[in-house]
Length: 172
Length: 441
Image (tube, rainbow over all chains, first blue to last red; front, top):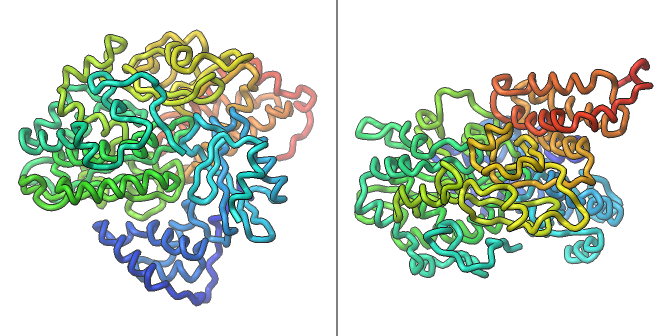
């Protein structure tokens, strides 16, 4: 479990340089209008930054705190709680493979072993060419099509060993 | 990936209100939806009914919460303060954080029929005189996110959302909040914390969210399927809704039942509530996959007690399944075959719960990883004497009333039932020769 944890971070005492992209700042400020309190946009804000950078760098934690008018430590508390927010760099494509009961019964372990072998990485790791990060995820709500995994925003069902190579080839 | 109702026959609004509009393509256009009675319930409720009438009608229908707990929806709403002295801000939140392992029904409703949910959120918002609605959607449902947002934009243009809706003087809008993972967000009060932009730790109850929920204001949290029933109850009435169970159950309505695991056919079907597990598995699922026998089944998700083949003839409704030692939960069954080692199955379930514990209270944070460790040892045949007894103690120490929320008690349900039904498999995992040795952690 700990090997697959991409949310852990250590904030350094010196504030790292980070400039929030103007479009991202505007997107976050728009998200704030959906709520009675700006704090509520913290997850939206982290996602906005992650969409641009692939992950959430340390400096962004402070920048988001300023936009939302909440302490950076609160932003970090949220960023490290949620598994879809990455506080470490990830590869160009993130594979999340369901390891819950529906996919357990349909053989996700074999599919996962094939992916690990093909990429030469374990859960929680990124390939040396920075192409893929491999993470476990809980039930993806498509249990009738197990084993199920997502690559970035795409959900793929019935992924058996034989499908792995062809599937990975689609993501350069 | 597309998901459709797995039934082949054409369905009618009278018998399959939730899914009759489903075709081979998702129904995304508001005009097409309106042509199939879409938003008729909004017009009827807002023009012909007082807010209290809507709540009373849903109370009369005995619609029970489809997220798994089965709490009557109308009763939940009736705890919200109404009238001139009620807070101006009140919220309706749709729990669309579908993450219970084995459950895949709300995805279908949102991806295929987003307008049905939005229509429901308008009607219920009106009943509560809510100021704003949120759909708390799990982050992985990216297709539903896009389709719900597109549908919301259409509904705004059509005047079903915004200021002075249909001339009533009532202002209301709905936003989709996309989450960032963590099963615990499906817990009502943890969901509210998450929606406020905090870590998803549960809150103490009371106060209940209906009194003090989102930003301290009265808040109702309802599941996607629960809400999706509402427009049909408005249009056809409480008696019709009660009749949908066709005498199979004292509960009302249809239910989205489903099958995953080792059946010939897996999928989701809308059936009268109270349909038996046998009918579901054999008539709709085509029975077990060739060469496999049924060992046991989870009636409605990872947090429900196992049932045996002998329980297949029970009506799948809240009270019947409860009386027989489990819970209907989400009503999507997980079929476990005779080739499975129950220890491995339970270990997988408990690993899920251990990872997804929010860590807020000790029994859950520490007890679940301990449970996993014991199960892993037993799975390897390296269990120590006394491990089974420790697991039994854990089912009590992590049980109802010992923790802040239902996460750990839910985790204990499959474990306690596995210990009850398959104790021999646990005993075979205890290594006698290790019992006298020093076992290091």
